[in-house]
Amino acid sequence: MAKPIMAKATAVWLVDNTTISFKQIADFVGMHELEVQGIADGDVAAGVKGFDPVTNNQLTQEEIDKAQASPLYKLTLKFNAAASGEEKRRGPRYTPLSKRQDRPASILWLVKFHPELSDAQVSKLVGTTKPTIQAIRERTHWNIANIQPIDPVALGLCKQSELDGMVQVAAAKKAAEGGVMSDDERRKLVSTEQSLGMDTEPKIPSAIEGLETFSLTADLDDDEDGKEKSDSDFSDAESFFNIPGGANDDEDDTK
View (cartoon, rainbow, N blue to C red):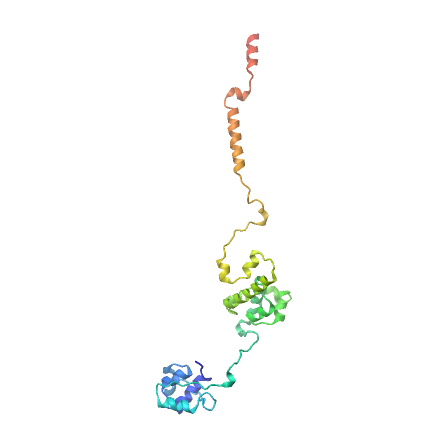
């Protein structure tokens, strides 16, 4: 239900100028009944000047009369034809002053981990200007040496759902272009939930690529065979010294 502007001041005026119940006023302005009672007692909204809803085109006198006649009647905000179809203001996201110093760090994070995002998408996420984004992309920003990339979601500059939505749009655009993506690029172009749900595949360092099929089993088998063979060759002293049997017989004959 739509609420009137300057709710507290409107409640002050209704308490001072009508006999409408506290519950009816509270429901109309979006306050608690005890707050309205506090206004009547002078404990709440002291010094607040009443705001006439009839003069300011928020209520009609007929609505006030109906509410005064029936305690169960609910006040209805006057329909304003000029406000129908009103579009939300377009433009960069508003960033509080306390968080504006964190925008370069979030821009650097987006540029580094999601380079597929356009300047317009980054600007919409963190509420910055395109020249600033371009300066960080080209590393010509005046403070680029001291900027560390930080997730804009962690900084509170945007929501995770908004970031995921932008990434999904970039993923659809990348797929439409038909470009070949690596595993790392594919993970960057999906939402956080999808990325966490993927199976992680172990990666082999580039320094030892090609050795994944190397095995020591065959060498061990060869060593065992050679050991058995050598044991069989030197099983006794005679074979170890390799003394021919005929030489011993000749010596005995000469003696």
